[in-house]
Image (cartoon, rainbow, N blue to C red; front, top):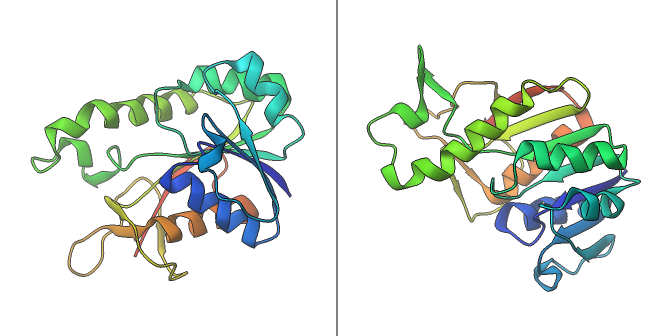
Length: 202
């Protein structure tokens, strides 16, 4: 299918772009600096600013889905305005892990070990997800990673979850950027989490 990846020059965005292209999807890869986008067969690198819905809409028009791998300095409302203007039905978002539950009525961000300096950035993701949960006219999916997402090989295996943090036998929650991208494109193709959040970890 034809898809657009926003923030395609970043760590998550570049891996998602590579994974999608490797599976034969046609990718419009958008970033403020397109020179940083991976040069791969099937990928069209394009300069774009997602903070301007009127400018972004024609760049994403014609795609069957948009995957946002951007930081949350662009609000859900701004991105949705571009999605609606372009007539795109489906949006997948790379989210944060902070709002995943780690116990009854406790989120990861509420635990004592969550770094204080991360909280302002984490709240951006929480606000974005809260906004999406009010949306019924766009088929959205919010993908929260494991607590630790790192540079590593593509293993191809992971475990899925919903709103709860997925941990291994040692109590760790980890996934590589490469396997995060694998899970994202698996969701793109399988479409299992319509208007829902999911997570993945080893």
